[in-house]
Every structure is written in C-alpha cells, then in structure tokens.
Length: 139
Image (cartoon, rainbow, N blue to C red; front, side, top):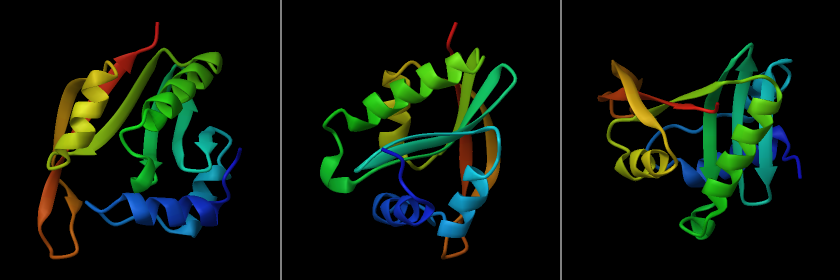
C-alpha cells in the first residue's frame, strides 16, 4: 500500500509528538525525487533516499495505537531490503537525543551511534536538541 503525501502528513502528525511533523508538501517534494524510497502500510511508513551505495531514512512513523506491535520493525526491515535491492550497502538516520524510545528501537534493530549534530533540532519553545547519527551495514 502506498500512502499519499496527505496520508503521510496526517500519520506523522499523530506519531511525532516529540517534534514538528512534516507537511504534506514536504512529503510530496520528497516523493517526487527519483532517489526516494517509501515503504508503507495503512498504519505506518518509512521514507528515505537511496543514492549510490547509501540509504538515508528521513522519516519513520507508526500510528500510536499500533506502536510496540512489530509494525515499525517490519517496515524498517522492508525498507532495508528495498534499499539493498537498489544497491545500498549502508543505511543512515538521525534521531533526536531526547527520543530515547526511538534510539532503543534502532539499537535493537542493529543500528549503532556514528556521530552527533549539536543543536540540530529546534523545538516550538525555542529549545534545541542534538541529532544522533546512527548507521547499519546491510552487507
């Protein structure tokens, strides 16, 4: 199932309680890129880019009512398989330092910390949070 930009935005608005969600136009712009890769089901998605031998996850979201039931892991694995089929050997992502559950999820899925971007995320109240860079080899 391929979700529309509007459906992706609505789902991310429900799921991204820790940060500002993407707009439908931001999703549409990313989906138009030839390198984009979307793996989605009715209650979740992984959106990223595959360029040469690298994939980058830009957004992963599951409906809060469906969290902790294996959907995120299943979508992440499907994204990795599809990225590898396009030639990716490594997957990268960023996660907010304050988002401990997401860090635990990615670590459990084989991702390791590879860097930090200080003050990368800006919150509505003006505060900032670091982005942790994580990676996983596919080969």
